[in-house]
Amino acid sequence: MSKLKPDITIIQSGIFSQWDANSSQLPRFLQATVHVPSEIDVEFGFVTRIKKAKNQRLKYCIYHPNLTDDNGKVRPPFDGEVYIKENDWTFYLGDCIWAPANNKVGNWRMTLTLNGNIIADKTFKVYWPTT
Image (tube, rainbow, N blue to C red; front, side, top):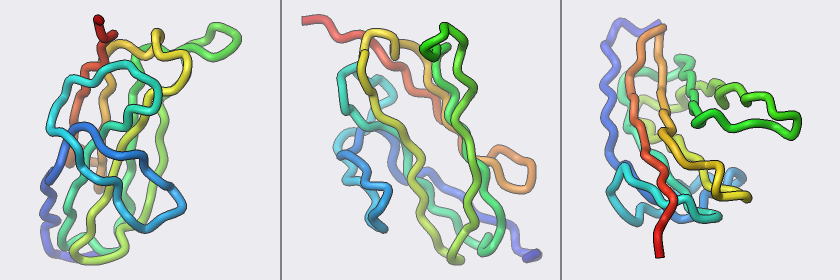
């Protein structure tokens, strides 16, 4: 493991274009905000720049606002891990609103953890838009 202290910065946070998981391209940044309308296909999250942490394991987690499955049970947070590929690496963590949109309202917390420490933490307030 590197003796250098990782340098982490959230460089963009808010609403993005649709993310393509099969592409190496990050989604296009559209609007800086933590207030997100609960509308189908609205993509939101943040991009971090991580330096001096190559080959370390980065854990991510998205805490949804008590979303339930088809049986009415609260879904667990969406989480996983990736390996940092370069010494100067950008990473997008985000989610989008899917149908039905009316049950997505609430606080969505997104975190990144490196070596047991939360290095990025952002909460988005998803709201029901009024006409």
